[in-house]
Image 1 (spheres, rainbow, N blue to C red):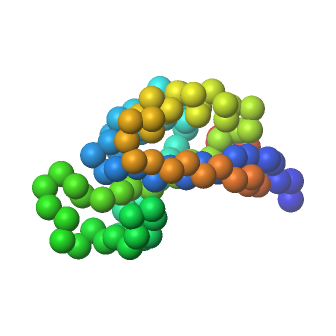
Image 2 (cartoon, rainbow, N blue to C red):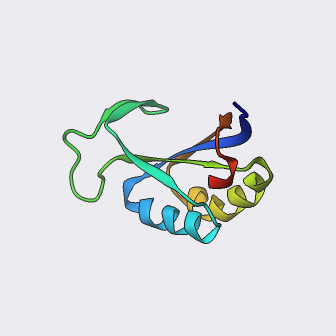
Image 3 (cartoon, helix red, strand yellow):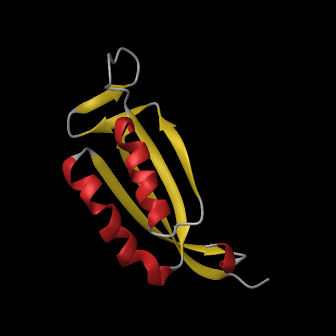
Length: 103
């Protein structure tokens, strides 16, 4: 079976900015993505959890999408304004997909 190169992008962002980020992904032509809740983790400030957070500080979401490799730079430029001002981590990895036309 033929496999095709793709890029998998995982973006951890403050939940209150999730909609702004997904709107930018759609505007940039991303055909599909998944949004996952992040229950907790560890970072610069140490361990954290969603439990006990009050108000708008609802934690983080992880947005995952797959795109064709030649679209990576344009996508990163499109989402950078949101990430520049808010907590966010972007992870880009190589991936293989069965149906390249879907991405």
